[in-house]
Image 1 (cartoon, rainbow, N blue to C red):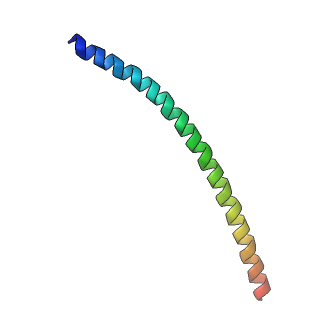
Image 2 (image 1 turned 180 degrees about the vertical axis):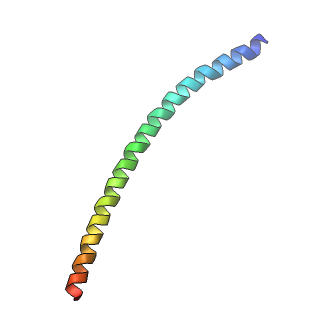
Image 3 (image 1 turned 60 degrees about the horizontal axis):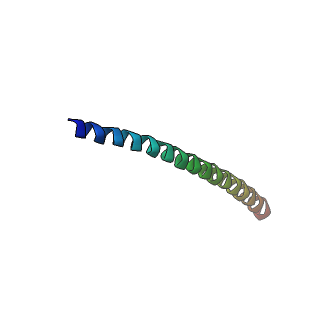
Length: 59
């Protein structure tokens, strides 16, 4: 019984460290996602302005 308890305790302690590590990783990922979204938006705006420009020049 005691051996399993020790194993569980170790797992829980390790789990805490792991969640903190994961949280840090997730924060970094969300930052990257924000950057990507901003780039997409800028690209979309650029494309739409180019499309409208082409549209008006073709008329």
